[in-house]
Image (cartoon, rainbow, N blue to C red; front, top):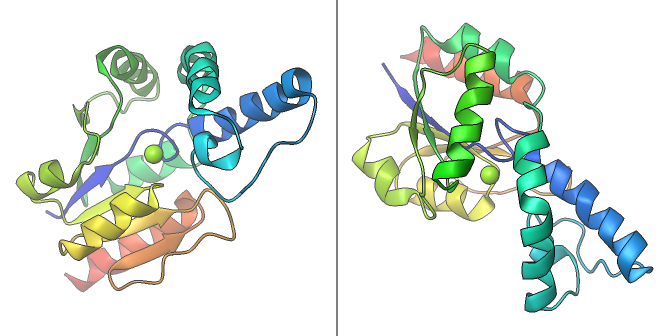
Length: 190
Ligand SMILES: [Mg+2]
């Protein structure tokens, strides 16, 4: 059975979009001006012209709210349940122990609590290789490109319609419907 490593933030949880909401509110209400420099960036630290200190301060203020309130991304529950008998899934995430515990509770609520989670994985690649993963689904362009360089097919779930990775073994997808279609067609080839 082919093995797929899932990311949590921006793939299973809609946390990256919630960061966008909180940071735009901050810019509007606190900075009282538009300080955005590159709206296509996944990380808010790269979207605004904020100093490192300012970024750290904002991050510590909003992080817990984001993790606690982020919804499951549309389609996750439907698609994963349909694919469970065709693929083996694991989760590889940068989340720390506390954040992972919160995600476990939410995954339990939708019947997906039995997926094995590897957390505190900042760069992921060693884990992906050790676990002999065939595919990853991630919203981090660097992680996707790195996986593809190591012969792992990367489904890049874009956070912005303008973003694309043009690279062998990288598949650009916009939503869980497209993920489903790609994986089912590739499954039929085996
Ligand atoms: Mg992510």
